[in-house]
Length: 243
Image 1: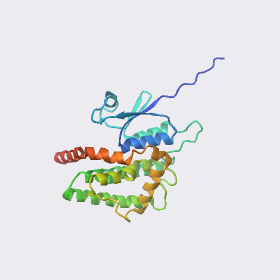
Image 2: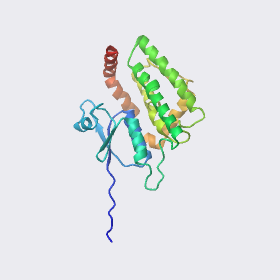
Image 3: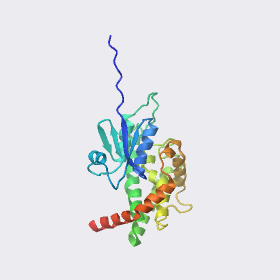
Image 4: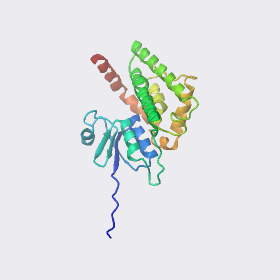
């Protein structure tokens, strides 16, 4: 009888860049799933042929390379990781998205809400001025209030364990205070006493053992965004001119 040789698992590599909350999402997902991976750190001012070949549309990080497959866009990668690595060797890998169809759709709804109603206007508010900044700040704060209500009585968005929506919201936990500092306090989204559930969640998120291993150093983040803030402001001006 011939003995069948077990096939080696396809290597997993993650194209990332310093300071990216989107790549952070994927690192946490891979770690939670117990997936060994290699980090390939990009200089986004001088993008590699590898990045351009595997993400020619957006030319951005993160990109997950799983064997000969390339998956782009952070939350799509998290979903891919959740399905492709459903179980670890002992069958105990956690689900990042709920098994129930309704709960899974609900998680995707809140992830989309965070992306478009919280993070998008938040980022734009940081690099604009005047009436436009005030409008975007109001819009973001209204959405943060809705998000805060969703967390009432819960440790994480899905309950007691980290999940898909928490990864979607990670920028609110570690990056928000950095951006407020870099912009000189021109935009303050979480003033004292506001959004208590979101504040508590942020502490829970950043203190989680798996999460903390993938968080960039705060001082280095401040230096990075300070160095690039004029580029961000310029991109907002260009975007407004196109509209």
